[in-house]
Every structure is written in C-alpha cells, then in structure tokens.
Image (cartoon, rainbow, N blue to C red; front, side):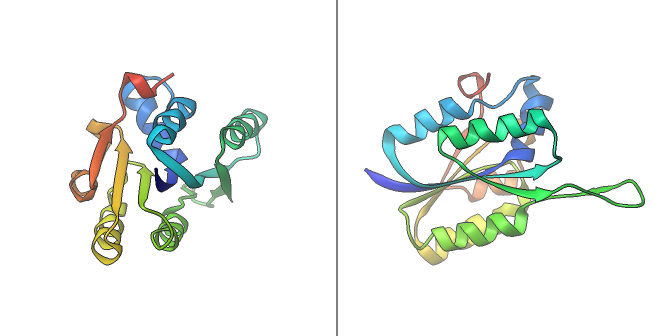
Length: 157
C-alpha cells in the first residue's frame, strides 16, 4: 500500500461545493475512499477560525475522522474586506511532505496551487492528485495534477 499525505483547503471546498451543488463535502466518504488504497500518514485540514460553536463542532468532526485541523484567525480589515487564506501554509506543508510519502492529495480548486503541483511533480517525481468541484476548479490546477478527481454526488452530503 502506498503512503499518502492529504491537504484540504477547507474554505475552498466549502464554498465551491455550496455554490455548485448547494451541499457539503463528505469528509468521511473522502477518507474512506482514499484510505482503501493508501496509508494516510499526514492529513491536514486548513481552516479559518471565526470562533463560533458550529465551526468548533465541525473541526472536532474532522479531528475524529483523522485530520489535523490547522487554524488561522479570521481577520476583518478596517475597509470591510477579510483576510484568511492558507496558501502559503499549505505550500510549505506539501513541499515538506513530498519528501516523505508516495503521493500527495490536494483538495482544492484554487489555481494558485498549479505551480506548486507542477514543481512537486517535477522535483520529487511523485504523484499529486487533486480533488475539486469541476466547474469551479482552475484549469491550470486540473492540468497540473497527476490525476484530477471531480467532486460529485459520491463525495457530497
């Protein structure tokens, strides 16, 4: 069985599945699917901490499944805009894990990760699978993946 590291961009998955399907991503089903063929050695879920109870419950569910939940505070700027993405943190963690596992699995449709996926595949010669909402995933990211898995009914609640 090959080893794998999972990296979930929680905000991206939440908003894209809600927008495209008006449903939520099924983290239990996703874990079951990946763990059938891979030994999961790292599983990080990156989220923004807004401090509300419903969100804390969701984070505890992710932990119970097997994810390490990494939180960043929600920052509201004076002009009303918000800051809170994990792109740099996910990048650092994926580059580190690429040296330790057989495959990386990214759950995000964010095109900012295309260069990262290309770099990891070329430098470390390992596969990087991407899961995302097909109509909302950046073409550059889907093209850079070793294998792209569109999120469909089987991965939705």
